Amino acid sequence: MTCQTFTKSLRTRTASLLGASLLAFAAIGVSSAGLSGTAFAQDEGRQFSAKAGEKVNEALTLANGGQNQAALTILQEAIANPDLNPYERSTIYQMMGQYSYELDRAVEAQQNFENAISAGGLLPDEVGNIKVVIAQLMIGNGQYREGAQRLEAYLNSGGQQKPQYIDLLVNAWVQAEDYRRALPWAEKWFNAASPKERKHFDLLNFLFNNLGMQGRQADIVKQMIQRWPEDKTLWDAWASMLANGGREQEAFEVTKMLYLGGALNTEQDLLKVVQYYSFYDMPYQAAEILEREMNANRIARSPDKLKQLSGLFRQAREYKRAIPILEAAATQSGDAKLFADWGEALYNEGDCQKSEKAFTEAINRGYDAGKSWMLIANCRYDQTNKLDRLNCEMTDAQMAAAPITKAREAAVSAFEKVPGSSRERGNARKWVQFITAEKQAVDRRCEFERTVEQELCYQKIKQAYDAEVFVGEFKLDDAEICLQYKEGYDAKFRIKISE
Figure 1 (cartoon, rainbow, N blue to C red):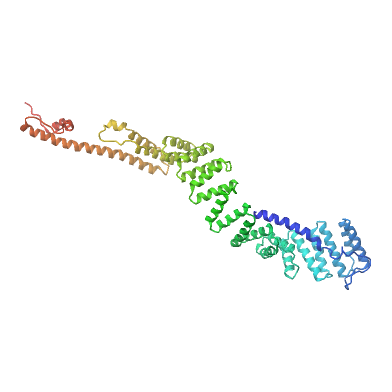
Figure 2: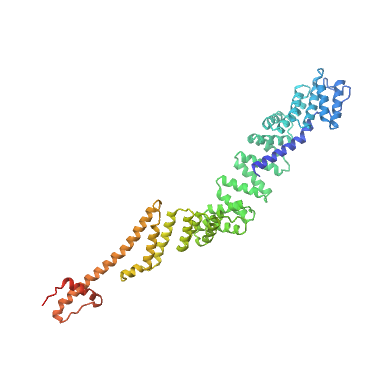
């Protein structure tokens, strides 16, 4: 039960208590005894004169017939008599208070009861009873603090502590939002109740919660759960107290138990379960629950929920499962960020072609072009790891046409599309330099290999020329490799002698 709901129920109960008890104290001893034209009281000074008694009897007759206003008019004439004794004045004022109350004139009724006390014709017990009536009227009129103070003073001074008085006093202090003053009376009311009903537990739970007394609130909620285990609001309150008390793991266990037991059915409750699993680093379980409840139509299949689901699958490194969810979220919402997230998921799966389409759509819808082109370029470059490397046996034309060369060029083209204003521009420039240096390293290696081979062949060609005098012929070792260098050697090192 929420604070607002509980307070509203207290107001209703307060009104019920007032209606049931106010009439019990009004005009005490008058309506029951009846009046005649002669004196009837035994105590000295507590009797009506014939004239006053006649007026009072007339008023009683009118009131018994439901003519309260007419009765009031008669009593107002009677109270104007200067010869009335204190008892007569007090009694008449009580009657006026009662009839004013029945006419829904609470302020007027309160003043009449105050006058009844001031007139001095009441016994101590009667004064106490009228004070209770005045306190009740004040509470009923919205003067919660003032009424509570008067009722509390009456009870503390030895007044009869009836359960309905204590109930009303607690309600008044709660309405005044003075929960600390309400608590001892609420505990008295609770302890005296037999049997204890739900309202007794609800009141203490409400007060402990508002006073921040978590330990005592936990105790009362435990008792309530034992009595009403089917009430989910109690379990929710218990989980909330655990969480607010720094015992999140226990709160999670309670929530999980409720979910597995089928007690959680609202979208808000189900999302709380998802959040708990996510918080405790179980994104896969959180995603499974969210997907299951979305399929069961207990959680809306909205773009933000689809985004949440895809995010959980991505946290769990379940990129393949995240991709179709992101696609649905992006196309359903048209959100640029969701298209970018979809592109990134495709990038993580190495699907560069679809990833580029998603990122291009994200850029067209206003997403960060620098970040998008960086990921497109990285995806293109990553493809080079799957292609055959260049080797030095290839000709320049073969190297230029090789798939890995084309992939590098495509990556460089993408890196160069990163806008100059983007924070990613510096990184893009470094990537271009890296890829260029990578190609240059291959060229240098092949050039070095070719140079080493040529030098070795030049030595073998020289040796063949030197041995020609002795063997009678030019005999070249490794002719298959070195013969291609003979013409160059001759042009560089052998002098052609003209005849």
